[in-house]
Length: 78
Figure (cartoon, rainbow, N blue to C red):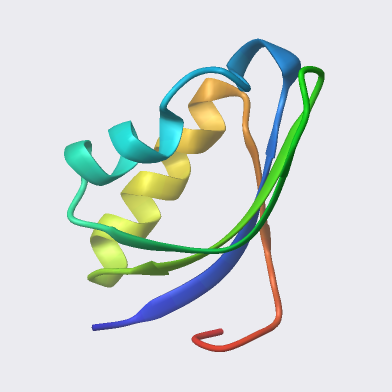
């Protein structure tokens, strides 16, 4: 299955929400957290996402609608 490395930039309002859990439940995506830095004011998580291209595209679009910035990241699976 295809893999993509992305960095998610969370706004303060979503730091305490289970966004990655919801992403994986709603779409057929397997996450692998590669790095994370989360504070009370902001969050940044580097993920390797595995799934079919259509599911990955839909999942990333979902994150964008929540106000999460999704940036492609260099690394394995990119």
